Every structure is written in C-alpha cells, then in structure tokens.
Length: 174
Image (cartoon, rainbow, N blue to C red):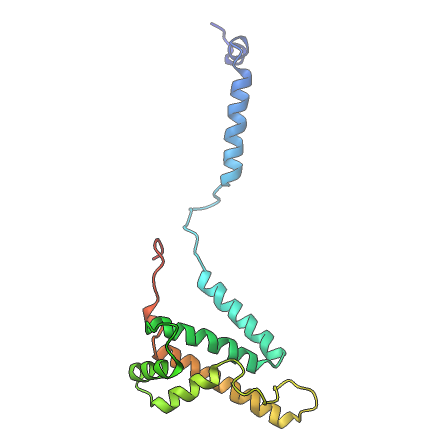
C-alpha cells in the first residue's frame, strides 16, 4: 500500500490507460459542449427558412422584371400540384383539370380555364416580354402588373382547388 494514489497508479503501469480515458472524457465534453443554463430543445425553423428563400427569389425576379418568367414557373408548379391533389393522371388534358378544379373550388369553368391557360409557360409566343429594351415603360408596367395579378389568382386557385389542408405529413415530424 502506498500513501499516494498517483504513485500506486504509476507502479501498476495504469498511467497511460488513465491518461487515454481522461482524454476521451475531455473530448466528449468538448464535443457535446457545456450548458451555461437550463438546456432547451432546439427549435426547428425549416418553414421560415423556406419562406425567406421564396421571398428572396421573388425579389430577384422583381429586380430582373421577370414577372412573366415567374408566372410560367409558378404556373407549371401549380398545374402539377393540382393534378397531384385532384389525382388526375398526367395524360388528362387541361380541360379535365379545369373541370375538376371548377367543381372543387366553385369557380366558373371559363374563369378557371383562362387562369390555367395564362399560367402555362409562354402562353403567347408573339408577346413582347416586359423587360425588353425599346418597349415604352407604360405597356411594360401594365404587362408586369397583369402577370403578377394572374400569379396571385393562380395561387388563390391552387389553395381553393386542393388547398394546403391536404399536405402529407412526413413520418417522424409533428
């Protein structure tokens, strides 16, 4: 028996093993971090992050005066989402989609069909894009305003015709 525990460890040749154990414990605490208060669950902000991303992309389209392009992209998304939500096969035409959306939303068939046609990418190939040089500012502003109005109407139609109520839940998330 030794009066000093450290001399016992060194005589028993346990010093390297204890040093390694201390190093592992130290690395564990460094990796986990020290709590400086009561620990709380991390708040996931995925939805807010996506909303911020969507706003940033919208601002880029606004700076580039690309309302027609944004309408075409959102229209393609909306058409596919409506087909998915209304369980229409990809081979069904725009008329069948318009009828199903009209039945579901209660809007007149002609209005729904007009919105779906305007939401398709480049529905009028002869139309001068809003950002083209050499076009007077008034018609450009009117075209951008019309495209943005159509985009809002398509977004409303999407929420009425299948809505956000039908989102599928990801397993493991609340």
